[in-house]
Image (cartoon, rainbow, N blue to C red; front, side, top):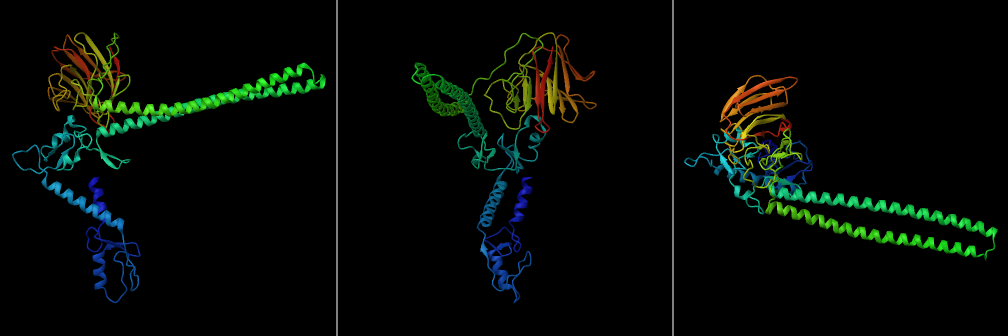
Length: 477
């Protein structure tokens, strides 16, 4: 797609006379452009006939008014410079995996920061463990793509706000800033609603007081018609009226003071929220928090996922029951138990005896596995479920095709999977690991025979963003 866009841009920047990128472009009255040199050559070699545009064949008389197109000139010069840089980079990039011979690289992995030839790039394109590794055209300036603020990170994303490329840590900091702004907006709205409610209540109190005063004045007028104005009762009514007016003035003054206090509190709270989120963002970058491991529950029918093992390419729900494949790498704290390369996660509990059945709702490209807790976590290939002696897995390719893996051996299963719910049964004493499809009936898909010598956990792996891949633990017994 990127090469197609470059080709279209190159065609739009091409002069129709010399068929090259514009040099000092000039615009004719009809709107078409050409190089200044090409225009001079055409006018010098034209006959006595009026000069015509080579694109639309419009003529302009004996005198042709042209003007320089500054924007088009800048775009053409920038395109020419970028093309020159790309050609220089491509010429000198060699495969980093072939040290003994000078083999030209065809791709560069931004995550591994290596350039690869046609032979060595196959692993990145075929193996599930390299899912999420961005592979681009060969680059010879990887050091120039390092983030100036976070030297260990590579520039990956383009920020429309700052109009520059940023790394994962920059993106995390920007996300925390956006969260702080949203929290501030919510707090301001809540305080505004609170002040509106208080103002409405005070307005109702003032209305009630006004009605009471009006009623009292009417009573006074009626009393004037009945009694002597010098009567002592009138003096009492006057005192009551004065007291009511003082009460109204008191409430009005309190509302004014309270309104000013709430505004000051709003500004202080907003500054405090910005400070708190800024501090949180700095702590996440400089001093990552210790991962939370969900406590084991006494309920044997309840099984949660262990966030201390989750891959940075997976997102876990708040109830620790669902995991989903995400496009970008998440900023989880470093942990010796975490799967750094393989997009996988283990359950929080492991079992060393008895018979256990787990039902998993899954979709997309997934692995459902039974694994020892001692499985490798940091290897690119050996950590994947089914590629080692420590795990037994059932893999779904997203199109209904199933395969069983153990110790690197693959067994292609016949038929097409129709159900999205898979039951995993482990009989520790007999050494049986059985995978079945759960529909109106239970259909056995594959069974492993193994001598289980260590506690086993439920494992989930998700390898594709498109189609969306996710899995949920729906039942455990």
